[in-house]
Image (cartoon, rainbow, N blue to C red; front, side, top):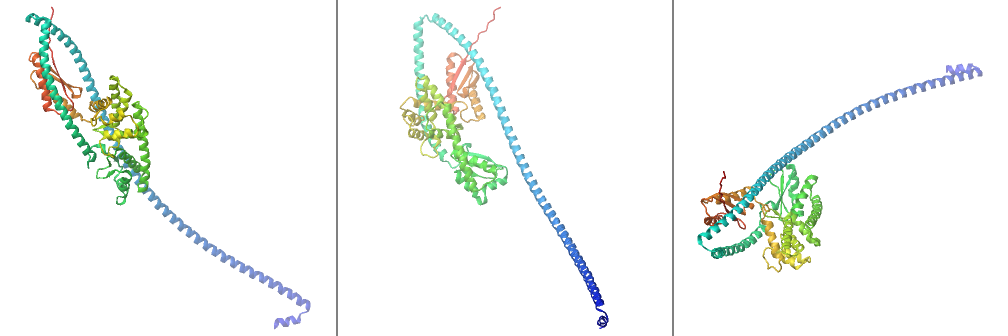
Length: 529
């Protein structure tokens, strides 16, 4: 009311001025109010921003702390894993060092044994050379003495040379007839013994081929295991890995308490080699499961078959034999993994091929054909665990199947006397086979047994009265006996030699025969002054 009354008292220009002033005041007030409101909003936003910043910093600190804790945990786990792997590697290295040290010791022992054998051989050769020189001189002296004795006998007996020769020949003829009768009886007895021995050999071979257990190293192979944990991986959960391995390879795997070794056993040497190499690859790879086992075994089998073929080609090249069927070459290579009485059959076949050629050349026959017969004579042993029958007949059937000559087929079938020989090459291969198998060092024989046999031979000879020295030579196939000329004369020397031979026959067991050579030496020494 007061304002209205005051406005009523004012003039229009004054009213206008007042209105303008009021409007200006309203604008100023509005501006102040807006400024105050903007300042309030800005302060609220700043407070909210500060709160968000504080929350973000707290969250960041929390994330950093969690990351540091997780990193520390992962670092500790990785360090623990590294320490475990390092310790495992150290154990493996220590085991490998022990194994290498053991092998080095074995190699050193073998080298020392070889050096000692070489020294013994050198000493034996020198002794034999000296004895040969002495024997030549003794032979010359004996010839001179025999001439002197002949002339003295002619003077004493008043006989002519022809009469004395006739009397001497008559006596020698009687002695030879008696010795021949004894020799014939001996040969007949040996023939019967050989027949019995062959029958026993057939039975023993059958027993050996199908026996449930074999202790010979020719049917087992050992695989080194780095740790006992690996044995468990080889066996697998509930035995699934070892069953898959045996099914894929066709061999038996023996895992026992023996540390560091797993044994692979099987009759087929090639399968056993495939199994051994496959197991070594699986252990080295570390991935052992049925699918991986089948892959590794298949790859290894291809590699071994290729190597087998290479062995066959090498043997064929070494023997200078050409034109063999590829199947025969592969079967020949399988003999590299086959042994007979400790003798490698492939090396034995190559040796028989060489010996057969030498014998055939000496007889004026075809040495090339004889060498081919000798190389293939034991080819049946490559499959005798898979095919029924003896290895000569199996080998003959294989050679006939791959178009080899009838002479060769007969030589392979009859090299043990199972069939009648239709050509001279059959007895040639049989003789070469016997020579290769019976030569010194061809088949396994321990050094102790070998030395004992030689010592027994020399002991039997020196046990007779009048014997001064005895030497076993040619691997025990001959014994040379030195007698005292004053106690054993020429008449008794033959009897002493026969008695020593009979004693050896009664007390010793040996293959073939032992030659007894008795040497009686008379020396007359005079000095010219």
